[in-house]
Image 1 (cartoon, protein in one colour):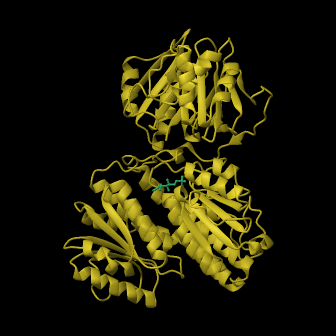
Image 2 (cartoon, rainbow, N blue to C red):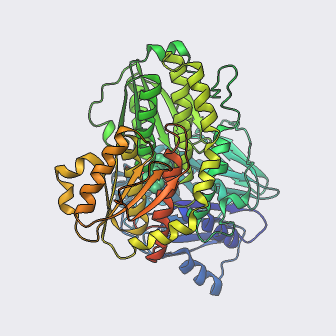
Image 3 (spheres, helix red, strand yellow):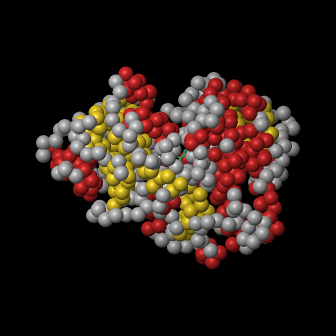
Length: 609
Ligand code: F6R
């Protein structure tokens, strides 16, 4: 998704913007650009492709100035090209803007501006904003900006500069934007990592609040220019948390951060004494919960699979019906939802457009809303009456790993809380679960210790076209996540099936040399059934990779390789198994020479429908 960085201060705007855009590269983009106020004029430079193209050009042709804005674009309106890259400027280059989001009524505004004689250079929706500000400009950039924004419909983080004024102005609506507060310098950006090298004090901007950044500091106001207060949020995580820290890829670093992330998510929340599960920003009482007839969990991609695992855990321990849906479907199918529904949105970024829209829909229908998110002050969090932050720290790799495991932790917390609320989970059983949840970080570390073994096994995926992921019960949800991880970063076509469903069709796809990954996190009767399913697979000549808990491993020779999981309490091998699947996908992608952290066609945060 697009990245925005703006700077005003005493240093070289070009250098600070480029360094900030580098930190935002994880958001995914197809072009990059910069506009810097150089004396009495604005110089704009922008190119299709990687940020390095822009950097290379600016290295030979620097733009000098200490006020500027920059952007990495992920195309929505108009293909990736130099012309469509941001910034966009008024015809005379006196006004320049960068924008993230979508201006829904841009066609109508474009027609109006064209009839006034404005000439457009790009196919983007954004360009209308530059001309509109120019149209309203009468010597005060903020005035013109407020008037122009008043005409826009849609979602936007919009930032503008003028050749005539020493300032930056900006606003957000349904698209992330923060302001960094430095000493004698200020920053604006789509995300905190872009400014963390320079300041830890930021404003998390609210929708429809306008900011004016000058050499004297930052002031905030509403559309009538009445002052608005905003608390300064002090960032406590390290800048290093947002960089690779010695690992080859962000994804590997984030896989290895999981024991810490899990500990952070649990911090202060789980105790055998008292209420057992303590959640701040959580107002749902036992009485509220017991009035609820149904829980609805809605999310996208990996977060959706975390929701499916949540369904399994909540239904098992709280005996409450849980429905799940992908957010892009949910609101269009007239879901049965009312004031007796608890709606849970799961989103790492808290900015995923479909999830946010689902949440708004559920609120409109009267549901109680709880969001599970990793980003403080994100849109999903702001719009929810109950919030459970996952505290995974910034996740930079496009493929979600540590966010997923902390979302699963959130699901355990809710399953115990709701189980106790509903009376279906005894205190003793809850204590047992708490003890075993506290073992999870160690069990994940044990699995991470198998990195060499898993790296070797990943060679089985080096030259295959298709992979199959199977499991039963909760393991099927894990298989779906394993299959998504494999396809999105290694580009191997991967499918997930319930192990028992194979013989109803998909088994026809198996042939000599096909690879089937089977997850088996439990023992008992179902374990024997999975083994029978594996025999069917083996008989078709497929190679079997079995991920199973110690003691439940294959003893009939049906697996080609076995990755064993530590012996754990019931339901506690979900996370260690997920880590194995992440590492398998990671090394398969590395072996195939893929761009692991920035897989093709994908963006980290999908803020458009
Ligand atoms: C896959 C992945 C995506 C996200 C999905 C939702 O590895 O990262 O499937 O899980 O786009 O994103 P959030 O959680 O930010 O709403």
